[in-house]
Length: 223
Image 1 (cartoon, one colour):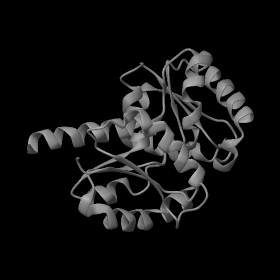
Image 2 (image 1 turned 180 degrees about the vertical axis):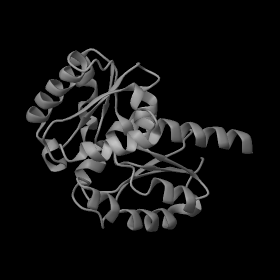
Image 3 (image 1 turned 135 degrees about the vertical axis):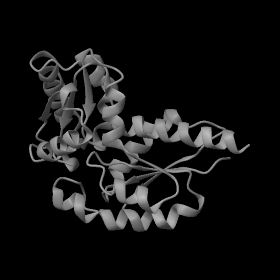
């Protein structure tokens, strides 16, 4: 069995971590690598501000350092990718951020990507990141559903809002692929794709798929 992929949820919500675990379950296989999803006990209930993002970087680095010896790869399961570059400096393993991976996966599925954010305050943070990635010429829009992380467990309300926003991104802004802008939205991916009729990228799935592929290839090269 190869070294595990550690998926670190930077908030303290066990509910969100359980949803992440379910979302990545199809990527597990008998011959590994194992996929281990963890919450960050020191984190806030949800990452909803730049202050939240900045505040979890040191705890993420500490958690990853504790896991370094037997890790195969790390995934930071927050759409702001907190600590991504710092952890890449710290670790000898591959490190993946779900925002970066989700957007890069979307670019393989359509010409113009849209993002479904949780709150309006998330959008400036996303735009700074997309600008740094150099992908704004493929960007359609980023629209909020107006719900915080804790509210995403209200299935009827959340599903209504993600479908409304998804259709607006498609019909008004010309997006032909959508990225879910929060790991807590994972349970809604398949239903949203059916309702909107264009590809939907769940970013944790995208990042973990990349991580698993890299670990398997590294294992093959070492054998």
